[in-house]
Image (cartoon, rainbow, N blue to C red):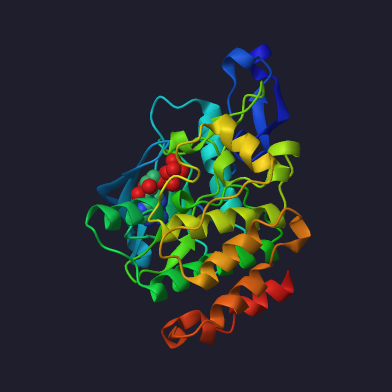
Length: 332
Ligand code: ADP
């Protein structure tokens, strides 16, 4: 009976490129995928679903509560019509986050409901949503960010990146759309999936490979050779600074994706935004050094920002935390 023959196959997560082990029926027409419940598993009955707070590429995101722990969370779900591979990818991305339990500027996983349908991924609640939407809302209401707010965001994202580096994780898709902001206006890196983002226009299918790429955030060596390193994350971090200062303008606006590729490969970089503080512009330029090793490390970035005049770092709690930024970067 063919239906009873099973094999463990290694597939690639189309978003992260990481291998997923899949328990599959050998007949591809009837592929069944399995996720193994582990210590992150939470009973479905323990979750109270609240109002809708967002729409992701996989499905809707709700406000939720883990009743036994009396904790609020965000509940990510997946559409009913999703394929088994989509479900597996969805849970695989949650699994990536299982390794990031300590970083104060990386959104934390709180649990997984894999038993029954639909699966839920429970995440730390970031009340103000993704940073791109937050910046666009400020722009729509004719508000701006103070220099202190910009520096604080810049430090927090650099700290998140330093933590990921200490976990030997190259993000590959750092952008404001993938950062989240909470009620305290703390910014954290919050999305570990690629190419199926709700902001579809930020991705581009290059050449014949069936992969969507965030070309406007990519370093020249990533565009040319497909390499992703800590140094290419720093290039993207420079673009993130530019997005923050411009309140989420589209990088290289007015250029097509192909034009962006040619521009970046011929050593072109973004122009200085209006009213951009000198220090931030200097930092952006350093992040966009052509030679990857000449770009600053996360630790150097934080030191540069820490040293800028007029910023009250006393209000930023992680500087007094035993697991502060420098610990992470030196541990990397
Ligand atoms: P994507 O498809 O871009 O990966 P997500 O599924 O991560 O999107 O999220 C979709 C939207 O849901 C976000 O833009 C945000 O508004 C909201 N959201 C996602 N995660 C959280 C969270 N942890 N806390 C609060 N809101 C969230």
